[in-house]
Amino acid sequence: MPFKTKEAQRIANQKWRVNHIDKARQISRDYNAGHKIERFALDIWKSYKMHMSDYVAMLERQHYVCGRCKQPFNFKQKRNPVCIDHNHDTGHVRGMLCIGCNTKVHNDIEIKMTENYLMESDPDWLGTLT
Image 1 (cartoon, rainbow, N blue to C red):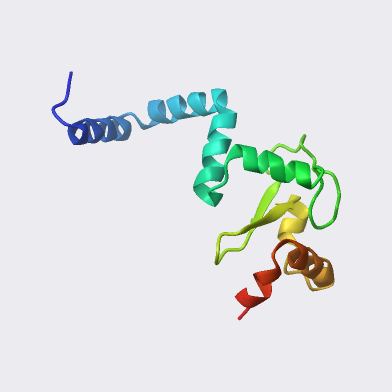
Image 2 (tube, helix red, strand yellow; image 1 turned 60 degrees about the horizontal axis):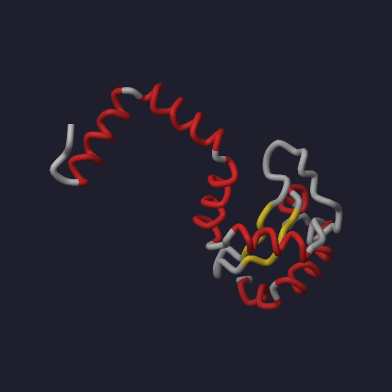
């Protein structure tokens, strides 16, 4: 059934999704499972305005190791083997961290290591502290 406007099509699609939520979710899961790289590329673009080629280049510059602890990334890990570290105020991407280092940034014991990493990757980070 053709629609007169794109808006009418969008509304009809939205109503269908509401009325067929389980089927809509399954369609989405099936699509995403077959398009993992495309989904990942879209996610890093939406979150960081970073192209996939920039992501790979940054990993290569870091020799596939964490920018903070220098341990190799565990790509066999199911979720988030590499975290894209960025300044939340400016959006500036500083580097790639392992999930452990990404969560340790505020740990008092780890402050000096974190400070060294931040100074190397984002010299302006001190200006964002309040």
